[in-house]
Length: 149
Ligand code: HEC
Image (tube, rainbow, N blue to C red; front, side, top):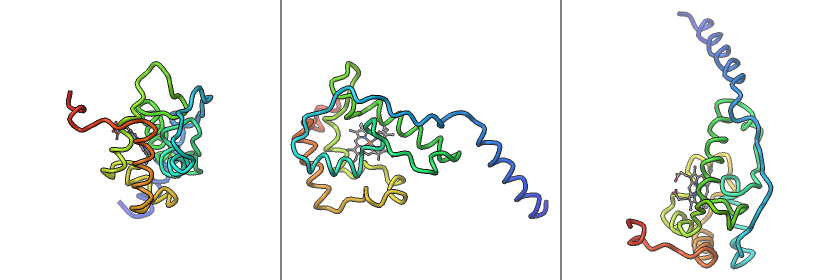
């Protein structure tokens, strides 16, 4: 196996996976309901760090057109919106706003792999606290003990 063959094979595989239809439509469905944000600041921080995966106002970057990044982006957005979507506030389906403050306090959201390509989503300690407190004020905060039930 020489290097040329290996490179050629890699290029072929990368070209071939672009033909997989999943993750290309980049839909931003209509906004059907919005929460009553406690302050514009909370909304601003949310917009910086969370909205791409938890609203219908996703900004789809150029690499979300290129497989396999496109698959990961499409999956994150669809799962993220399903769990917690501020553009479909008041929907019949579950909308886990009351876990949002805790996710930020524990450093679980935004996901670490989102940050290198989205430096604006990297919040300092002060901003994290502001966002978590604002999310708690907007959505309420489920206590750890209640989560287990
Ligand atoms: C890159 C996409 C992405 C970003 C950005 C993001 N999330 Fe998430 N979020 C997800 C995905 C995927 C899930 C579901 C899987 C999981 O829990 O890890 C999720 C789950 C959640 C949940 C439901 C609880 C749970 O763990 O299942 C909450 C609440 C949440 N995110 C809040 C936030 C907040 C607040 C921010 C911004 C500080 C944020 N997320 C940023 C993708 C994202």
